Amino acid sequence: MTGPEESSEGSGRPLLVLIGTGGREYREYLLRSIGADYRVHLLSGAEPTWERDYVAGWTVLDLTDTVGADALIGAVQALAAREPVHGVLTWDEARILQGAKVAAALGLPGGDPDMVMRCRDKHLTRQALGNAGVPQPRSVLVTGVDEALVAAKDIGYPVVLKPRALAASLGVVRVATPEELVTQFAFAHDTTVPGAWHYDVVVLVEEYLTGDEISVDAAVCGGQVYPMFVARKEIGYPPYFEEVGHVVAAADDLLDDPQIVQLVKDTHAALGFTDGMTHTEIRLTPTGPKIIEVNARLGGDLIPYLGLRATGIDPGLAAASVACGRAPQLTADRKLVGAVRFFYVEHDDTTIAAIDIDNSALPEDADLVVALARPGDVVSPPPKGTLWGRVAFATAVAATVGQCQNALDAAAAALTVRPVDRTEPVV
Image (cartoon, rainbow, N blue to C red; front, side, top):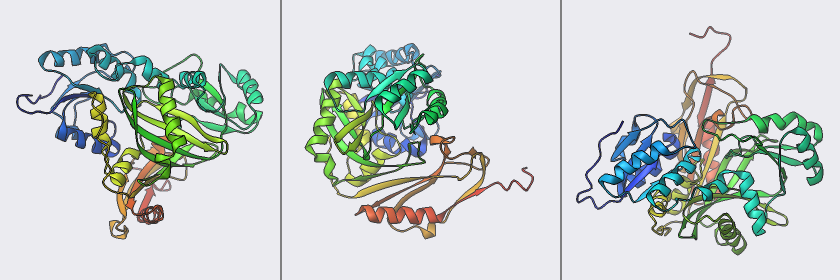
């Protein structure tokens, strides 16, 4: 099923295929920017709603399969038969392999499925980085608890159990003893999300690294790596690694740190990553920075949005540019700080009655305060809730990190999450 398509005649705007959009709260800002400079044809699993304001046309397809790309390729080839398609883009983790396959079918930048797989499959990432001597934690792929116990003993406790095919710290847990490993192995083995890939051997046992964790979002064009933003990650709910917040500062020294810059470049070279967007996670250990993982897409958790607000660099336009084989324009026009904090309920299986936001109590530095849960939703904090346990988020933009944190504290105080009173009948 297809929707209206704007004529290319006289528009002067390149035609860009976008596969999926993600949640409006997290990704609308990207589509808004791209839609102003590009004609976007959306491939979607459902009729678009809010997206219609930003796209020139759309095709509705069955997107339940996250590996095969024949239907997507057919739709884009039909589109290309009418007019040139300049690029293919997706920021959906579950669709990045399909995006590469579609780009390959049309001979467009980013059309290297193997390149994407070396990021998507965390075991392949470790192999590629290990072969190139890129600093990273020790890692062993295991088939079950017995092999995991052997690997952990060899590496030395504590260790991290990590799913092979997920992202966003889903299913990742620190274990300090053999008993904890036995208890937690199922968490790493069984955690999944819609569209996740399935392997016969799915768990990595990895060395636990200490130190702060950062991420680097970069645009890559023709093998040239262009770092855009450094985010400093805030992790909560130990022994799990829930990402509860991020801080992006335009003047962060790490963005120009020679060791960090070289590590990011060496990582991309080792992975053979030549075209697209990447989100590289790094641990700043006492013995130097080491790679945690690389995602072949823009970062999530509103990190690119914070970068946009803090620097003026537009990550959506950068992503569209490299998808079309053009070097991105990454000129910053401000030096601010952006931060995000995510909010959760206290107890598992909490039914939401309402989420109230007192906007009059928000300071000037508060940017967005957004409810994610709706009345009637049943949510849990990590580890049961993971990403989907978030009930709201707040962002702040200010001159300093301290001002951002103060604004987020005020946003937290202005946010009231009201659960259903279980002593009353639920209508």
